[in-house]
Length: 306
Image (cartoon, rainbow, N blue to C red; front, side, top):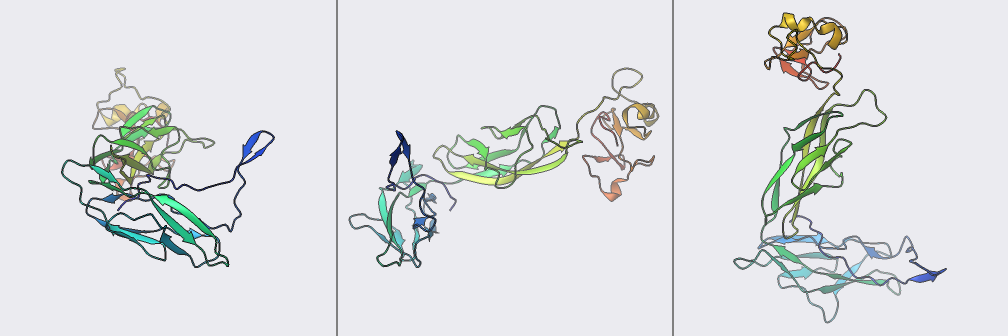
């Protein structure tokens, strides 16, 4: 069972008008209330339970179904405010089913007891969608990027993708998750120099046609901001050997002569410790670099300084 928020309870709140404008007084901090204000969906034929979680007032709390109201068949409510049951098996061709509204009464143990009423419905869906993270995306700081970070299966298509409100971490600044599961925008950093690169892990959710929701973590790699572009003597941005690459080291790699001709025939700056020795892949490649020819090199084109 996964949480799908489908209904808000009905609570009666006094409205006071001050100077012609409506004003809703804030409830006292110890006022009886319930945290679970809407119920998750149940998958067809599956069992589940949820604690309505009363707070405030005077514990312990007592829950029951209001006279004249009724729980859906297969469900029960304990005095301790736990709702449990097994969702009905949906008939062939049916993708969702919503129960009639029922009213839960919650009392605390004060004398006389405080009491509130909440209205709920139980939504049954055929199948929950499954979100599949895609973590192979790569972007560059200050360059527009659009990479797929998630896809889905199951549930009831079509799907809509959205952020999980940053509960699993935010995407890179300047980027958003679009409805098709792509991370789009221009990666930016604010108040940080040099721009921050690295792997960003964040949450993404998928919602299917009947409103069922599934969320997972995904990630994307952001490479350092480009500062220049290496060019060979041919003027085509390609290199034929490491020796040819080396002629561009002083200009494009912060004074280092350690430039490597990559498998893509473009110039790559290797990672050093401000010296003239490239760092071997055996020690691990960090800082937005990857392994090329046994040493750690920056992104295609030598677009950074070490």
